[in-house]
Image 1 (cartoon, rainbow, N blue to C red):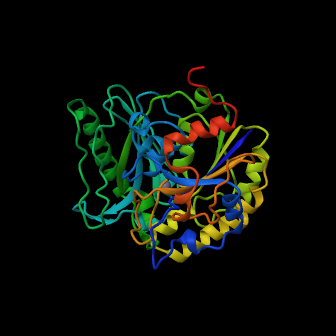
Image 2: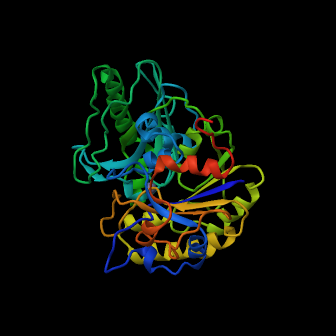
Image 3: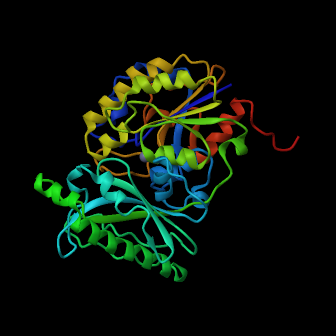
Length: 401
Ligand SMILES: [Zn+2]
């Protein structure tokens, strides 16, 4: 038996005027699976823990994030298709705009990607104290920076203060042996600032009325190490269908294949039919298909209840409608709650539905945060999920005899 594992990012919510977007949404296909399946609520990392998307995905795939999480930059780099070797340090980076006093005018350089790819290429291949620097543009004002060489660590602080109007930060060591890494990072941002400030691309951007992208706002340092793959661990072959780089990165980190889907953008406008088609196209080649849909979380971060509800309805009519009759185990859940009223992640558990033709059906008929808590699966933790899935796939291992 194969498994289709669908994550709606940040889908869980709290009540707003008595409803959550899941309660308010018209979603007959999701509710069909809910009514014919078994349901519960999931604490993706643990009760009361507010999960990041990176740590929660590790937990959902059965990898203890307290053991395997080594910073987000690693996932962003892998998700952007870069290769990493043991000990490499990877950062996420925003190309930002600072004034002469290094105060941030815009953390996103006007969200304008104009020639930022070439701008980052101007520091790609640079060497500082025998550490090789790679830089790659990803989307909009974003990119990835990698440090390669001996004696590096990710136990350092961010350059990005995460606030407009604040001065950029200096990289500081979080442990004694991180002095060297912090010094390389500070030299890098200083050199990059000098190069970017005088760069003809920025002069051209300014002439066009765009903000100059003159500062490397580095954050989320991660250190890479190869870990035991999903396939080695569970003896099943997995693939990932996602738009966002982070999710592809987590999947690559645990050794899943990445399926590139044209139109899968990781935004509320993603092509959901194309994602459903990718499930069918790859169904024969894999035992476990992970599908990630980001739009529910983006709408939550914008504090937009109606957009989140509409995204759920679109997922129902364009994606779930297509795959609901596939002959496989189906799981639908979230990686964390992102209540629209908070516009941030919260520790509230997420609803979970599990469908298999022989599963012990419960009495839950509507897939939402409140009714799923009454379901037959009760309260689960993220790390429980893979064991349950493997058992239904006939890949579980008996304890004792
Ligand atoms: Zn998330």
